[in-house]
Image 1 (cartoon, one colour):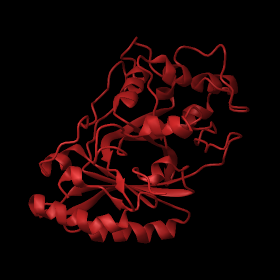
Image 2 (cartoon, helix red, strand yellow):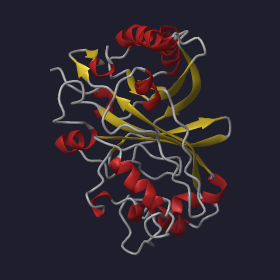
Image 3 (tube, helix red, strand yellow):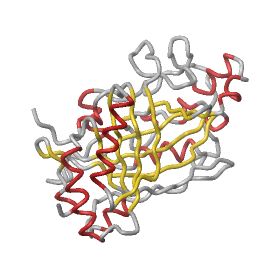
Amino acid sequence: MNTLYQPGILDSVPAVARYVTFQLSHDSGGAQGVKDALARLSPLVNGSDVVLGIGPALVDALGAEVPGLHEFPDLSGHGVKVPSTPGTLWCWVRGDDLGDLLHLTRKVQKALAPTFAVRHVVDAFRHSLGKSGHGRDLTGYEDGTENPTGDAAKEAAFVAGLGDGLDGSSFVAVQQWVHDLDAFEALAGPDQDKHFGRRRSDNEELDDSPTSAHVRRTAQEDFDPPAFMLRRSMPWMMSMQAGLMFVAFGRSHYAFEAQMKRMAGHDDGVVDAMFAISKPVNGAYFWCPPMRGSQLDLRRLGL
């Protein structure tokens, strides 16, 4: 059965993945060069092995408009940094073998050349599964426990009711967080649990967690309106540096921004305890086009 959305968004996180960000080259060839490059790329993007995201600047360069799409805001403040590092085009390359992903990435790179050049690549992986079947963060805590499921996941992640070329699309927030694992390991076990607001042993929420606990800062139902989004984050590592690629899909950017503002203390001055053991080093928004049959639906971009 054909779907309107890129199916990899709704699928569980894969065993391994690559997050590849592209930028326009100096010899991009203008709007026509961009259209030609996207036409070459389109057959490689089935929405499952490769999920595609288009940045706001690229939409503007094509003279197109996607309602609700804008650049990632700098949400720094209250002693923490939440940087904005806008991206042009983003691919989430998914699979079971890193070697296969390298070859697929090269195909994507060649299809986009010379209009686009690779700016940033992060290799990620699924860490050991928790009791609920969710992958774990490198701290050992389950990630995505509060994700909506079934129809609720579709409602949270995908645009609906706005017409052809928009319905089935999704807005994605992408952040790379770098963990300070020494700082985390220096915490006593109960203090580690209080940072997250959950017990690592059984994934149960703590009744007496502090207001700075991550679970309390990001409780989706506590926002008005509720801020539900579909998280598809994965751990990453490079040499001895490691962290989490935070990736969240939504029918708009509202849910992510509401949660991120509260984490950074914009609502009440209380900063999420996560900032004591991790920090975001980049952040960008992209629009993930819908599907039409087995092909990307790029009519909103004039293609």
